[in-house]
Image 1 (tube, helix red, strand yellow):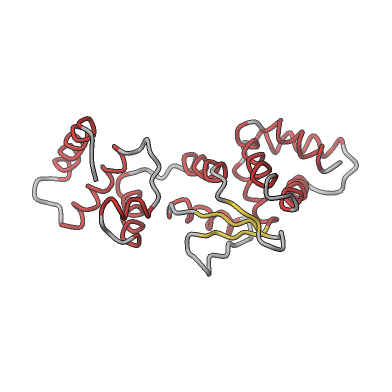
Image 2 (cartoon, helix red, strand yellow):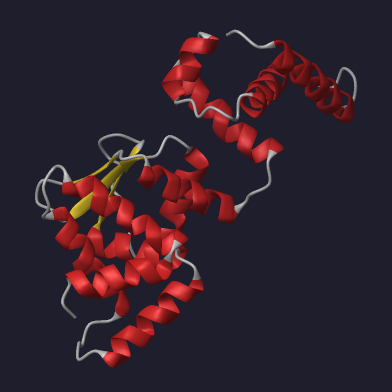
Length: 221
């Protein structure tokens, strides 16, 4: 793994600062590995690397990369729900999501174990669960559950404006069911329109009103 002169300088400063705070001679080999890995992530934060890329750079198995990443998050970083939610919507934006062949589930790859753990916990709290039986990094969620998850992660303004729209309409559906209907419409699209539709869902996080207008237009409610 090649580092620029600037990165080498950053690495040295961060390493000494963290090491001396722990106490000279108090760290084990595994502690050193964790410290070095996290500092490398910090100084390389401008570029998102997959677990595979890290494994190639560091000449270690992906399983060890996943372990180091999760433990480093726990040891060196505060649990930041807002940051994880933002990361979730960034993930959707990257076009690595797809619908199951029957159109009843959405599937996406989540390499970040901290994010994956949060998704599982929040789905459980909402009364649902994700299927990760085939591959631990591929999260498969039924559309009703996914709609509920989005409602939880969208800003409060989204739910408030949806409620207002529902009251003005003649529908008997609740806001989550309407969102689900919109997502089901995306799932029935073509290979070209599905990625665009999934990106539309990000608007609920960045521009709630725009997404709400699209939902009620395309569902004819």
